[in-house]
Image (cartoon, rainbow, N blue to C red; front, side):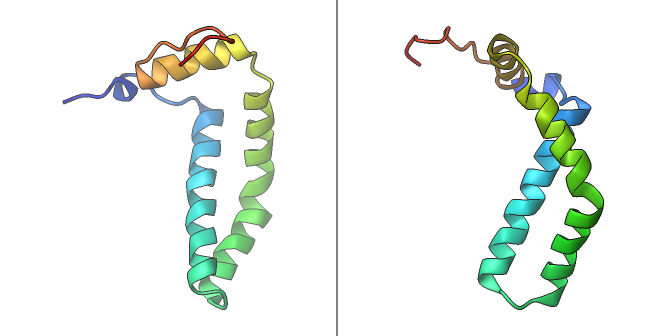
Length: 89
């Protein structure tokens, strides 16, 4: 069975931010579970040194999108139509 999101792919900024979010959640959980694991610290340092700047730039691009565009994009990716602002979900 194909999900609605499979038909629509993420753009470059969405992909970059999504990948970074998943990585950071994973690293955060690893730090909680094993706070002194040097491998986890190395991965976090590498992200901050190499990838954080472009991710933050992509996040800024996404945050500048108008609400109507964001709602349309969410509808595309999820296959749901969101009601206008002020309505009930």
